[in-house]
Amino acid sequence: MKTSRNSPDEAVQRILATVDAIPRGAIATYGQVAREAGLPRRARQVGAVLAALPARTKLAWHRVVNAQGRISKRPGDDSAEQRQRGRLRREGVRPDERGRYDLQRYGWRP
DNA sequence: TATATGACGACGA
DNA sequence: ATCGTCGCCATAT
Image (cartoon, rainbow, N blue to C red; front, side, top):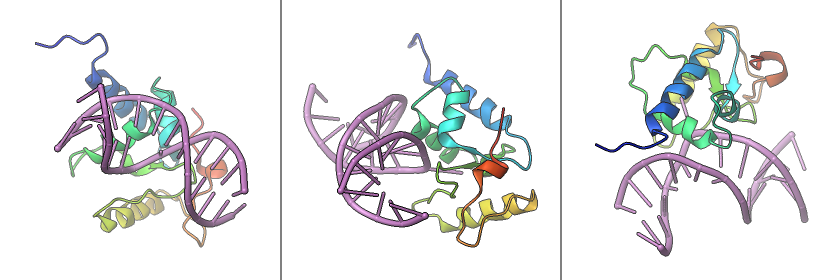
């Protein structure tokens, strides 16, 4: 059994918990989630964790967007992008005419 | 070891 | 504001 001093699974749990803390109607960036989880500079890992979520997860993965306030492109899955838009829209989170979400307005302020 | 790959981000032209 | 480049960091090959 491998006993690492800082298991990668612990980082995953912290990321999941942080995403779970984003309130309905708000959005957070990957980098913000990483920092809130106590894992600065690991925005990419946040993306990797979300990418690995089971399809029927309860987690509000759709509340995470990139630092530009845009829905990040999913290689090989354009439908996910539309599902995210729809989920956000249902919560009253709407993009501008060019598909950008206003972080000043919807950004999560922990 | 060495490279390549990403739901990313900061920065400079 | 947009875009290319480079930095970061965990994983996979």
